[in-house]
Image 1 (tube, rainbow, N blue to C red):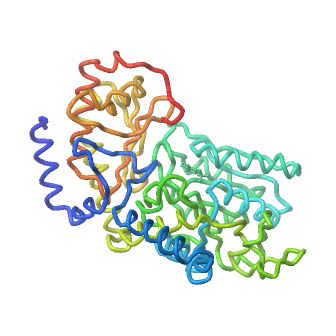
Image 2 (cartoon, helix red, strand yellow; image 1 turned 60 degrees about the vertical axis):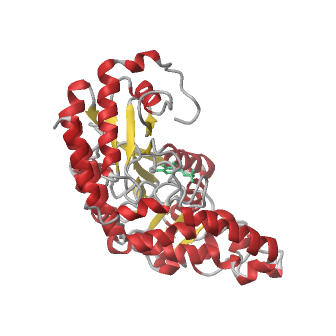
Image 3 (cartoon, helix red, strand yellow; image 1 turned 90 degrees about the horizontal axis):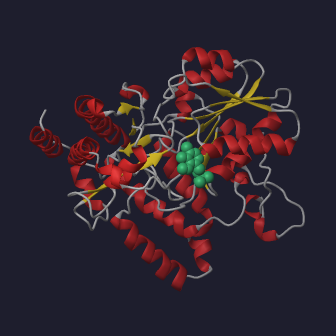
Length: 426
Ligand SMILES: Cc1ncc(COP(=O)(O)O)c(C=O)c1O
């Protein structure tokens, strides 16, 4: 396909896209901007601007402390029960609080206490830094001889069945995995891995950060024990918005958080001198929950409920498949290789492209003074350009522009003029 046909085909797809109108719900001042980083930080929904102003002016400005009783105190469970619908959980199995890292800490410590006869924790080498650091820190803190085993990924994209079967053994206390890998977008079979963990009498914890809002998730269907996830990527809750955690209903009674904060107390306003945990998942709260970032999640969830997660997934697969097909034809001859699974059934909503000059190519893409478009994907060391497809606001035209620009930049070597020096956030 030549570049005119690519743009024409993309326009046809856009015209037939049933979710097309949803792009209008998002703030986008610059028509030259192509934002392909919703897998890191989602765009700002227009309803969030008015909703947040209302919460600030009315609930905080006028309601003051009274707003805790009328609205805010139950926000962790109210918002949690709405997220539950997106992840196949019961309303009383999810709360919104803290960060993903902190929620992992609370769950893993509680889980290991219930498996005190076993000391092996299994994860994989594709997993995100924080997931592994939290486990390492817990092992150090507990000092009980736990070990962390990382399953290998030979192709650095997927983890094979033989690797999972060999490593998840009767010694395993906990399996901790990202449902969708942050770098390659590899997506595990949640039910299969959960069944495997359970067959060895191990717990399983799923990190849903790169899946929630882009991929249908069925925690209850899989029988999953625990999950954590963030709300600032596909859920568009804004920078640092509050995370969520899930604990299966039948496990809640046995689990106890290692962080005994007052929001987790059964009677917080009695200010007793001794802690007594609340019932249900609320005992995993710690301190005050950030109300303002909770309200940004609420207005964003309205949009998801209107669009429907199955429709979003359908569009996401269509976009990423279109992108991969065009990559094969136009970018592979220019030195790009695919860093994600080709099969959409085991791929989340982003695609990683690998190129030895990935960092400098990203610099050119996002340089406002270079070319007709400003394109924002992200770079993940050592050589990945991650292209995130957020089906609520990305178009097939965005996909076509990305392909055209990558071909132009890598073909004429314009990136050679750019520095290889990395800023803190890439
Ligand atoms: C897969 C994954 N897990 C965990 C985190 C960390 O989340 P938090 O900063 O809320 O602790 C991230 C952040 O990007 C992530 O991508």
